[in-house]
Image 1: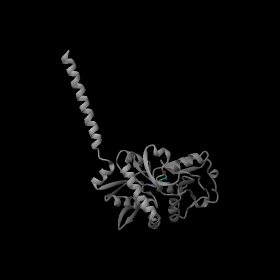
Image 2: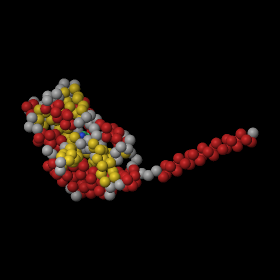
Image 3: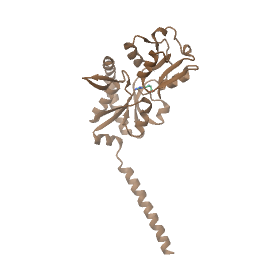
Image 4: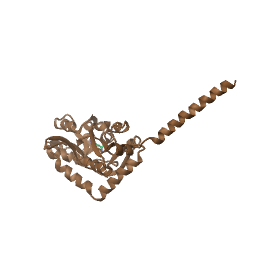
Amino acid sequence: MFKKSFNKMIVVVMVLCLAMVFVGCGKNEVSQYEKIKKSGKIVLGTSADYPPYEFHKEVDGKDQIVGFDIEIAKSIAEDMGVELEIKDMDFGGLLAALNTGTVDFVVAGMTPTDERKEKVDFSEIYYNATQAVVVKAENKDKVKSMDDLKGKIVGVQMGSVQEGIAKDQIKDAQIKSLSRVPDLMLELKNDKVDALIVELPVAKAYIDKNADISLSGITVKDETAGSAIAIKKGNQELTDQINKTLDKLIKENKIENFVVKATDMIE
Ligand code: ARG
């Protein structure tokens, strides 16, 4: 009798000990902010297919990722006193990479939609742009409203807000979602799609270098426009730090400068 309750007590004590160990672990867990500081580097996730936001360019004979988002990311790293490491991946995989810890933050011209806000946290908005519909130059006078795209093949980036815009605003559209924007541009040039939706600065970047494509006359309705930086949920210290850098850059008009500089670098 005595032995039985004694055994029970031992079990209870053991469970309590284990619980204390777990609580202790929770307390000692270093925040992501601390982890970045300690490791001396912050890992950026981006999709470098979106000039002037982020794109590949050969600099001094070496392939590099440049763009105004990259300049912003560099400023964030600099303010934290750490190195910046860049991971280029498909846009559609960025938030998963953030949540599994493959990257520390995402700067990719990403729009902070309500749906995304359920999965990750966002910084303040650092840049605003409208959406544009790009068509073959020879069709530009034929495409004046979303109605003119009825039943047409519309290309968008996989996992982007443009996917939703095409679904919601074009009747019977056949939506073609591809992972990378340069592939979408090729599809348009080769008449595999009738139109593309991308942010206006990106449309302009490609049109400037390709005489056979052009802006259509469509003005896209889009209340969610604007780009913000994504951070894994529950890392307030890191979010605050990033907002601090953004505030400074916005106040000093640096982001506009970065955009001009990045636009000049497009080849
Ligand atoms: N703003 C759009 C979105 O958030 C598209 C961003 C695409 N960015 C890129 N780097 N390809 O869905």
